[in-house]
Image: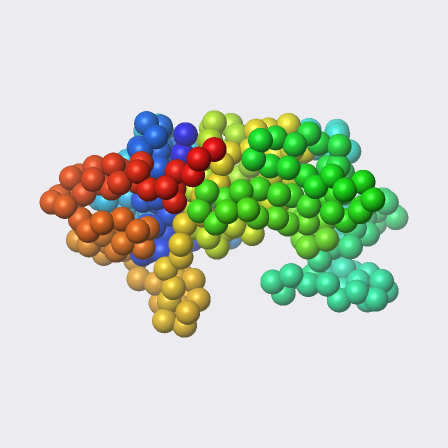
Length: 312
Ligand code: GLU
């Protein structure tokens, strides 16, 4: 079971089509189903009606979901259930820290730890709120040592090295072995924000499991989230899907193509050209005939490409 899970913050562009096409081809090549989920959980950034527009763009490209589209904004009860489960298990805790509090705590600790410009939370509220009001909820990333490893995800078990115990190891189908020490490199991350909204990490893990997704195929810009999602799966006793992160289309500035560096909405007047460009980036041959005929050809090639079908 595969899926494409766009956030409706803008129309599909050349970059997002690569992930859409790759996930569709992967599902088709393995006789699986392909789902579309509109990730409108982060509501302030979502553009009204953009979800519908994206679905239209996909349809013009011949990428049609095999089941009704799901909208994350309608699934908040499920996310709250997951939160309740984590809280009951002692794996999530309320946090009252503002950005300023986090900076102050880090400087008291003599640490200036940041990641992608974000302060790494030092875990201040793990020991309680100390009279303040909790607003956000965070995952305890230090609580996973006892989890059982599964086939393609293993926790480093060095008994003498506390840090390496929390390293998540996993293998990406295209990029190969990956690892991240979530506790040290990311910190206790937010599951539910102070404004009551649920984080991408929580929603994506709950939904991938609820929808029975076995293969997550998405853009390489998301690879860095994977270890966090695997920790959350372990925390909730959910299976871990296989992951494949696809190459990115770069903008003129060498950065990932986005609205900020001039990504144009897909030109749906010529879907074959748009699909062909995406296919080329994925290492697939040129188009052959119509959109439907080209898709059919790419499905066959996808199933034969060792890059996308490593031996288990
Ligand atoms: N909604 C996310 C995005 O559009 C993708 C989520 C995912 O594929 O895991 O960036």
